[in-house]
Length: 210
Image (tube, rainbow, N blue to C red; front, side, top):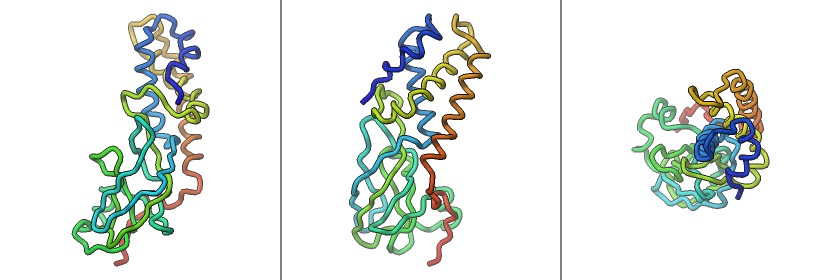
């Protein structure tokens, strides 16, 4: 794991009088925003057990992370379509009360940080495999080494933008902040494209064929 303090040598020279705790807090907020929007912090869930008549599936996640979105998930060998509660309810309002059968959709449980929800209700036991996107929790101080290696520069840019937009401070610099913001937003777009390359069944229309 890589600590957020590893980024300080690239941040402090630009905001020299900013207290270290304030810098770390800014990194924490930016890390959450970056990995929420880019979906770049990917994780292989291994094999999760799906129980008959139970829609929720608990998955093992990296330390101090929570689910952002399912990416590519398979029930046994069948690809599941990713949806969300609102979309599914619009097109199939009574899905929770429908007779159990082979699930076709997967989404995140909005109230539990490490559970996925299958729809329809499973009619038997299955195995769930594939990838999800996660983000650090609010209090995290570390991320996986590979994530720091691949996205550390973006976290620095986002953090500098956040700090330089703090009015009434010695390091307030909106012009330079906008420069860093442009780099940050570009990095999010690029990382999102890479993470979702070939992932064509995400958030698809959830028409139910019976």
